[in-house]
Image 1 (tube, rainbow, N blue to C red):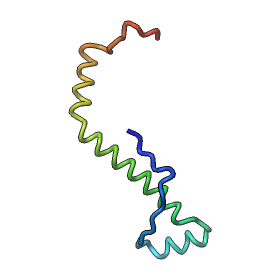
Image 2: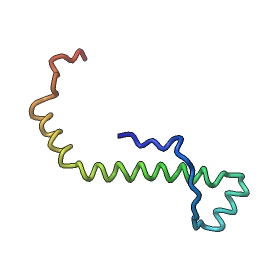
Image 3: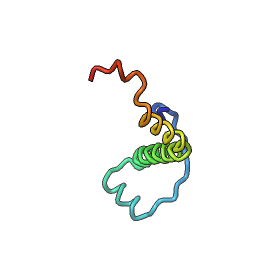
Image 4: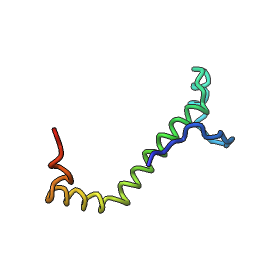
Length: 80
């Protein structure tokens, strides 16, 4: 599953941010909304996949064990 947040509409929200960090970001000409949006999207992806891995760790372990004991399906057709 690909988490694609591109072209989603923007929604106004209220955030509480460290006032000194916010002041410095503005002094540096940073687009705070875009920066927070980008970093939040990355953190959402990271948390999503961390949760997915935890929820599916047994199935992944079983699959890996099967491959270790039986080999890859269609391995006889590999040319490398």
